[in-house]
Each structure stands twice: as C-alpha cells, then as structure tokens.
Length: 376
Ligand SMILES: *Cc1c(COP(=O)(O)O)cnc(C)c1O
Image (cartoon, rainbow, N blue to C red; front, side, top):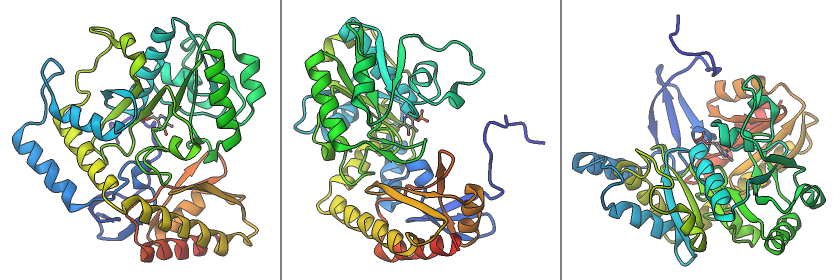
C-alpha cells in the first residue's frame, strides 16, 4: 500500500532516465515527450544544463536572501532586458502569483481583483481564490475574499465587475489547464487600454505561457502589451523548482524591506538553472527554429486530424497546442503512450501538447504520426 495521498492519478509506468527529448521507463521503453513534464522541461534534458547544475552543486547551492546573490541579479537582467521591471524569486507558480496579488494590493491600496472563469492560478489559498474553476476550490471553505470572475474574451464582463476598489485584473493569455483557450488579440488590447484608463493594474500569469512556450520569451510580447505585473515558473528552471514575479519598477516601493520574502526563493541552484535556460532561449535562432517547428507541428496536426470526426478543434500558439476531441481523454493518452508518445490533457475534452522547444522536425513528424494513429 502506498504511503502517499491519492491526490494524483499516476500512470503505471516510472521514468528513470532522459536523453534529449526522450524519456525511458524502468523497462527501458523509449517515449517521445510531448508534455515537458507539464510545460516545465521546455528544453528537454540538454547536456549543457547537466554540466551547469553539476558545477553549481559542487560550488554552492544555497545561501539565504540575507546576502548578495549575483546569480539572482544575472537572471533578473536576462529576464528583463530593456524592459522596466523588478524581479522577485519564489519556488513555484502559485507562490509567484501570491507575490503578484500581494504587490498589486499593496501598491494600489485596493483589494479587489478581477480574474476569469475557467482560469487556473495555483493551489495556495490566494492563487486558488484567483482561480475561476470551482472544482479546484471544492471542500476548502471560504477562500481569500475580494476576487470576482469575468468571462474570458468578454470586455463588457470585466467592465461590469470593475469598481473604484479594483486593484487589478489577472489573467492567463492562453488558459492552459482548463483547455488551451487563447485570448483574442483585440480583447487583450482593449483590456490593457481599459485598465490603464481606469487605473487598474494588469497582471499576466505567464507561468505556463512564458519562457518561449508560445514562440516568444513571453506571450505578452505577441499580444503587443506590457503588463504591470507578470509571473513565471514552469519553464524557468527547466525542472529545478523556481518561480518569479516581475513588476514595473514604479511599483517597487510596495515591496520594501520586510514586506515579502521566501526562504528558498532564488537560491543558487535555481538561479544557475534559470540562467542557463535563458542563455539557451536567447541564443541566436533558437526561438525562431522553435517557432517554425511549432508551426510545422500545428499544420501537420491540422492536415492529419482536421477531417477526423473525433477531433472538433485544433488550437493554440507556438508549442502550446490543444486538440479538442469527442473521445475519452484517458483512452487517447494511453494509446499514445503505448505507441511511445507522452501527451497531456486539459479541461474535459482537450488533449494538450506542451512539447520541448528543442524538438527536431523528425520528432515533430514522429509525434504527429503517433497522434494520428491514436485518434484512429
Ligand atoms: C501550473 C500553473 C500555475 C501553478 O504553478 P505551480 O508551480 O504548480 O504552483 C499557475 N498558473 C498557471 C497559468 C499554471 O499553468
């Protein structure tokens, strides 16, 4: 009998090794990974990251945030570039979102936050309260007050909830967990304008969409906006736990000495991973190639599956792709796994693909062939 809680449903295989974009189970079976550990190992398992982590562990992996940490400065620099943000490092997406909620409230002096129906922001009380899906909150009683939920892609529903007390609007640009639902570009442009005029802060949760996942370092760059606050986690450390909250420098006063903190946040191991990830993402041509291969994946999926009566929609941005289906999701996941491909689900009727950005065109074709066979 397992001594673990049954809060996860675990497939009956165990991965013990990885090579590039492939995972190997205990029996030695090889799987192409179209999940990246839920959008985490965005670069697969590259040897240069192994070397970086080994070197850092041999040197020093943790000191508290009571001392200088030039690796944090380095990662902040790489994350921010020419933009005008300050960074805080946490250990997860939920924690990054907690920091975002806290700075928005403190900087504005207001408490109300509008998030969206079907959103997902995490499992802590604050991030769970921001989450618009009831199933995430069931049984936990009263959440954090002053959250309300607008309809995604519906500006009027945001306006109807906005008051003098609204501190922030918080959203994912592509709702990931609930079904890979992209925000309309017009909606986001108009929302950003509305927030600016109304003096409401705009928080973008890039925990899943960030770090190259959608074809640019951050998804907001493709939407042509600059949020007041944004959060990162999943792909940031390529599997070493790390999260980040970035806010416009003018909000910096709200996070003054003693206002917020984290014991582990931004330690050397997490920062050396993040720094190496950013070097790879920013290396010349890397994101261009990822964007092209992601485009190839989308168009091949559409070519092979659009006419399949079991497939009702194929959507997404970059390497964040949802295949909406009338089939039982667990069946498709298992069929693909049996054929050597790891995929995810989202919501009630979507097969979610979050492949590593390092996928080759041969691997794209291999994944498409397995998916086609799995939907037969
Ligand atoms: C995964 C996810 C989170 C939560 O991240 P954790 O690291 O599990 O706390 C928050 N927001 C979005 C959009 C996510 O996809």
